[in-house]
Length: 539
Image 1 (tube, rainbow, N blue to C red):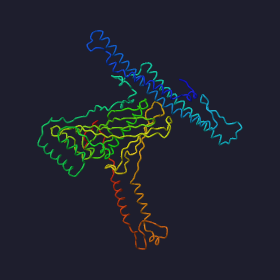
Image 2: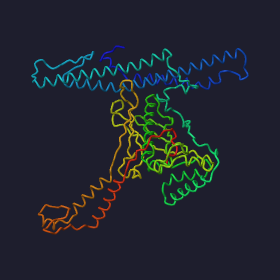
Image 3: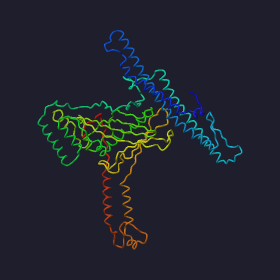
Image 4: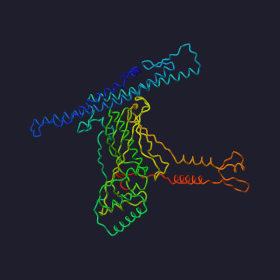
């Protein structure tokens, strides 16, 4: 389609929103016919050629209805994407026209830049150079606007053409609701619907009860149980020892672990949860852009990354699968998402692998499964976070407009990264309700802003300030002259005099030293790549 700059000026995103509302209403009406179609065949006892013909015709009708729903969902998504893009485009047109008018330029219907400055105006070489530069910038801005307009037109026209020519697949759907592509993300990872646990498969390298025990096995059992009791007596790795003891109980019953505690204690697990929240926020934005407002959302499972960093949680959880379900509410330009992140794992051992911290082979503990002394079991954990929406600070439809989803995850000193590691407190998932279309990529623009308070650094600066402000000064000034307030030892001939240390200063120095030592002991472990989906216990 050929259009001019004047045409773009007149484009109205509201008209596309209205068309999208009409398409959605008719699509939902078709989906509502599912029960009627299910009961349309007639009596159950109907047999014969006529029954077969009717059944074939009904199946064709249902299949066509599923394709119509898929086509309507595709058009609906394209209409909302185009409407959002036009809102941004209109803002760019208004800014460009305003800049031109304030500098005595006009932009013609074809997009040409016309200089309206009076012929008798007194111009200096410098002002002429500035006007030439501004004219070039306006020409470039008009070119960008027309290019973006062509992209919007191309995407929408492509969706309409495919729907008209029945070139949109229903993806093998078996129901009308399943055929609705506007109710799922384009990658298929998230969809609108109640919580639906994904089908997660775990490997099992050691077959339970498949081998006979030997005398050496009894010695190994005593050795490993002694290690377990010793760690428990010393209070080491409480979550890891709890899981290992359940393994030795030999019941195979599922066990839940404290996912909230794992989130606080381990930066690897914390990052895995935050990544799932970010992915879910992106999916929610995509579904909102398809015209959905208040809806439940469920997602597929994926391997949590990175691997846990603390030995306690390496032994308790190891590699695991993560998925989530959410409730999303849209009120004006405010988006609120309550998300529940689920962790799923199988507590077992992987043949040929070894513990990260000690190097002990998994085969040793896997042997106890084969003998029938210890039984693998399923583990799971749940963490729920409510992300209250905040109103955008700019009007809806402007590029700066953002509906904000803020995570309330707390931040505190952790075992593997004490005090200095930024957690998730104040982590902001910004969901753009009106993101500009850029080329073929029209997905979510999620901005994650991390705040790092570094409170201990600030406290140390305050401590140093108190020391300088509270030191006795008169004796030192008598030796080194007025105006000196040094804190170090003072040289007077062969004597070295130190300023008197006040008790409060000594206490502050002790705290300062402890914080510094803790920082120096903090380390970041680089874990080996997990080779399998479930990863097992890498102890």
